[in-house]
Image (tube, rainbow, N blue to C red; front, side):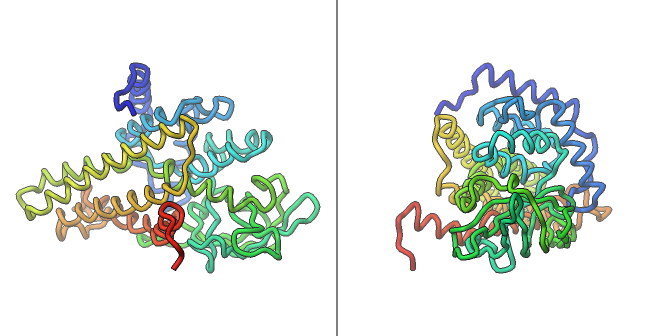
Length: 387
């Protein structure tokens, strides 16, 4: 892999940097999980990105993108995080469902959903997990019963990311009532304001509503809203999980920026901390760079026609545990001051480290728990027998 950027890539980087400098809000937006107003402010930012055709640069121009490759996407992500631009409220759509829809959707489905997704006009939530089927998605019990040209959805979804304020959700449903485990599942889209859908927000550890519980009681959706063939949901879901765990959802730029801020924090407090903290900071920096190189390698392989396989699980474990390590190291540098909430008058930027730490604790859980990922690595990559 050539680690040098081409002149064209360097020019592209400057174009992104200039646009972001001119358009990134001067003040941070209110959290999209805190209030409807914050959510809508982030939707407006998504529309601003779409106007510049930066909503999802790898998508074809006909769907609001620029038709660029994954290396250019990584360059965009580096500049995006470096600029301090708002987090992407539609990440479930553009980073997870969008690529899956691009691969498995019909031309009509792509035309219907992708442009509205890229523009922020329709924000998406995940609706995979259920009370008895969290990381074990094969245990899904929610049903989709065929009724002519429609499905009737019934069931109970939980930990649905962004569902408190989003417009649409995508989820796994059992379309074959006689099926078990991985068979007989289909991936289906439904509107969150449809008759029969009850949305119950779930507060996070920080009190914000990043999740919701969904109760589906006779929700009618057209068969058009099924992605792929009936019963192909598990295969398609695993493709989506590959994007989530292995590439799209957590680009390396996110962690490289955190690592740089961690180094700055350490330098500002070097005289106040134990010498061993220096080693922890260095390890975090090296891990962020190693993760970036790994993702560049994965992107190069995909550009050459490869696919994301079970190795996505190794990525997921690595970035989720690295995120915790970086924030724990920051809190150790700050000492007792680390307990200040972001809203505290004396907090300054300290509170952001505590917020980041709270969020990092979810990393080993969402996108499939790290325990599940280790099972996948053992069975599918190492060929070890089941216990």
